[in-house]
Length: 335
Image (cartoon, rainbow, N blue to C red; front, side):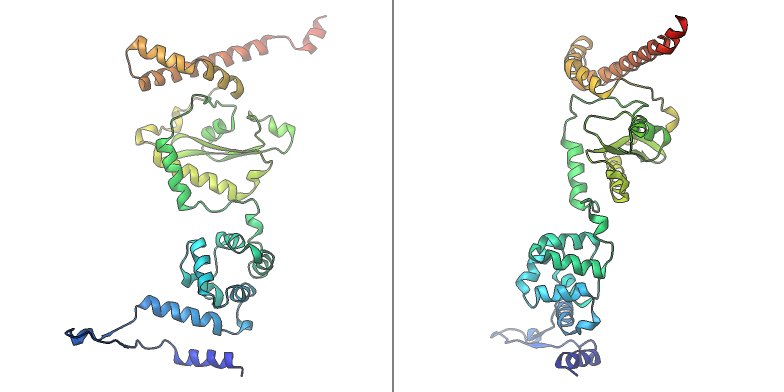
């Protein structure tokens, strides 16, 4: 039996060691009852995990744990650095090394960035120990982290709404998602698929999910990508769902409406809308505020409503004219 195996056997036979009292020198005049003290439980746990990390035989741990042990060795400074970079306890690193716990997929990906000089070996070890985990992270999408939730909430509450927004009618992906009350995705598969929804400039794929609360809707979150097939990855779609759920916290209860009140109609294309809004939106708000003697916020609500109705009417007239005009085939028949 090797010295390492013998140490392991002795550690197993002893089991959990009893708490020992550490003798400390008592200052003159100090009470005798403070002459001894017990080590904190957390210190004992870290000591145990650290011992196991280096005493378990190689054949009893995974390829990943073995490699991590060799990379970090007994370098406590390095272990502390990695733990800090990953925002985890040092104890967790030791448990990965002794195989008592497995890292989450996001931590495995982060390890490649924290230890770039060992990237190739880590990829091999991760693929051997956790097959397919890195494949699911190839798009760079991961679980929504706490910091991102906080950032979204901050943006929602502090960022003023831009003046170049547009109205999303029934012919957009967001409109369909609202009417059907479920997720809708679009990917640049082919031209026929592309024409089912109005596509924004540079958009090659998109995912829309309604912002819901209690079976009512306040709006739709739509996320677009310049990459084709980006939302064929279920992780990407799940991220959109989680952000939509997060955004629901930013709306007041009275801003959610029953689906039965939805009445979406076709609207002009987004490029035309943005140009028109950018040209007249601010001036109309200022004019309405002066004319009606109301605040800017109140005038803005009126202008939005008026412009939406105007855009709907323009698109209705456009469709009627297009439907009424004879097609080239009909003109040939008349001739």
